[in-house]
Structures are given as C-alpha cells and as structure tokens.
Amino acid sequence: MKIAVVCANGKAGQLIVREAVGRGHDVTAVVRGENQSAAPSVIQKDLFDLTAADLAGFDVVIDAFGAWTPETLPQHSTSLRHLCDALSGTEARLLVVGGAGSLYVNPEHTVQVKDGADFPAEFRPLAEAQGRALEELRERDDVRWTFVSPAGDFQAEGPRTGAYILGGEELTLSEDGVSEISYADYAIAMVDEAERTDDVHVGKRISVVRR
Image (cartoon, rainbow, N blue to C red; front, top):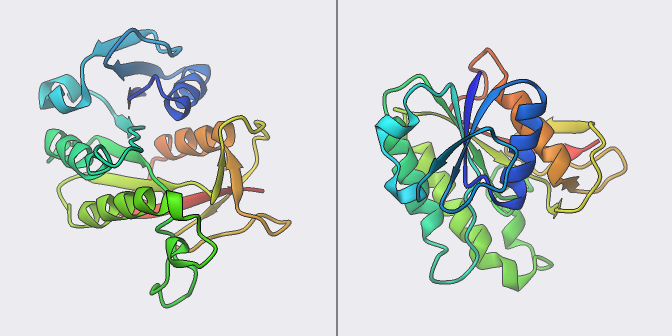
C-alpha cells in the first residue's frame, strides 16, 4: 500500500511513519524541511503547496498537521480544505489526526468534551479549531475521509502497548475508566485504519482509547 504522511516530522507523524514502514508499506513523508522520519521516500514541500499531482497514486494520505498558536489555529481548517481539494474525486482515503475536544459526552450529541467545566481553558481554542475543521469536513462528499480522535489524555511519551478500544463520536473510556492513549498506540490504530479494505468508516469520525 502506498501511504503519504503529511507533516511527517511531527511527533505523531514520525510514529505513524514508523508503524507503517514497519508493516512493509510504501511510505512517503511530506515535510517542509529535512526528513526526520523513517520514510524512505520524501516530498519536500509545504502542505499548502501540495497539488493533486503530488498526491496522485497514493492509496492513503494521512494528515498529521498540527497548529497551536492563536494566529495559526485557523490553519486546521484551511490546511484540511486544501488537502480535500487536492484529493477531490479520487479513490484515495484521507485519514486525519484529530482532537478529543469535539467528542460528545452525551447520547444526544449536544455536549462536547470541550464544554465541560473542568476542561483546561488553555486548550479550548485548539479544541474549537479542530472541531470547526471536523464540521467543515463533514460537508465534503467528494473525499473519502475519516477523522480519528485520540483519547482526552494524548500522551506523546506513553508506552506502545498494542491494545486499544475503537470508539465513535462519543468519548470512550478504557477498561479501567480513563480517557488516555499514547502516540504510539494511536499510530497503531491509524495504520490499522489505513489497512481497512471496507468503507465502514469513510465519511465518519472514529476515536481510540487505550484498552
């Protein structure tokens, strides 16, 4: 399988690349600067400069873009829109590294994690930006997208256990009642999703939490 990982130099991107390469996939890193990932092939280009021709031929494009400063938060929407436009009408799957703040905490889907009184105020702008990007993504029926939300506690240095629970739109807890997952286990879930041969998650948001 041919997989492109956009923003492959980030922490999540590097682990996703490593997982995919380890499984024998043909992986290309899309990076602005020097490739720091394990991908054997590289497209050295800014995300916003990518064209349909650049992404032609890939079975899966994984978007590991991240932005955290006030001036760059809108790029969660604009970068995703750019990738969707480049992949519009193709058979390639677009898998998006999403956020947990927009997961729902009630069955009516009217209250999200970010709305909770105990949600850290400093993370609310990021959660709102990622939530807006997801809502815009839901309007696209010309792209085979899947938005993959991690658990609430997304641990960059957490262990690779190889075990996770797959959820949907609602916040899912681990077997011992917490919402956490390591970047390494998230990478496993992301590559598992890339390897799916059915369309059950196309046009949907899924979520993952450690077992």
